[in-house]
Image (cartoon, rainbow, N blue to C red; front, side, top):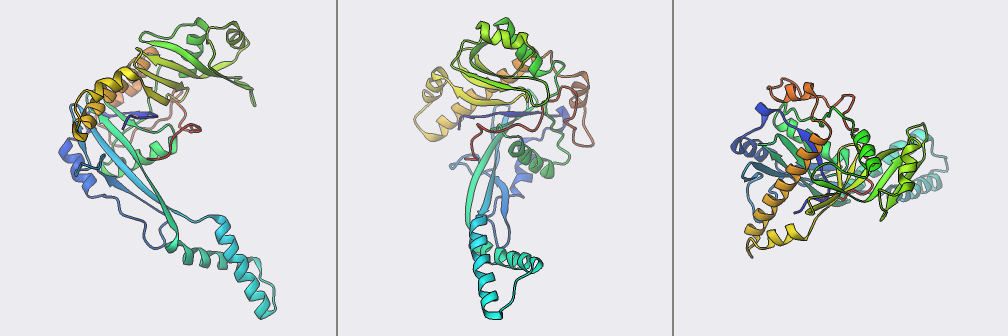
Length: 334
């Protein structure tokens, strides 16, 4: 259950639900399989197989899991059925099929095939850190993370969760770290980064297994390139890649944490709880340290999240990380 990616959202202090309230609303929105002509279905499930409730509370965290099921109906299959139907009509009725009729036939064939289509399912795990006021989502793809946030907003309106807005832009800070050859306190530079020319259609340079303090990288920065991704190691316990959208990609919890979790017990429940506690503490510390290294959240966001909100908080701001993350190294819902 170790998170492999992380998108995080700031929560309003007075809108964080209790365990009982969260369980109550999520129990009313359980997962159910795709039926009939539905292309997909979403709903809440217990975060682990041995659990019954949709909320798993440990210390100051509330873990939840959203399950999604999609119908798999390849376009090529629809096209084959459509071609066969068109050939049958043209041969038997000795006429050509027009564009409008083709579209109608395609819709009819799709509706006929959809109930028989295979399904693909997965789940997305997240937790509310009620003490630090963060929603942590195990995804580095903006659309997937936002799907879970949207479901929470529907269940707990308005549930004002917003992308973090920091006083210092992430790409500015990351460029400075690499140029200086030194990460902020608690972190050390790893051996991976991505540099991008800020100009239109600018070049992109990706470096892996490379000393980030090398003269070559410093020269690229001196020429005006910005660091948009950088590999970091947190206190020799967690390795990850930080993006300019303030997402953590390819998270690796190192051996010291794995050993601490495995020493908690042999049964599944004890191991799950120990893993969750260790993971949530490390991720919480990392997020707090990263935000601090970016001079903290903006005054506007701090003020907004310290008061109850009437409408969902908007993520738009000058230093709000872009929600259009590439997700190229994200993992499917598992």
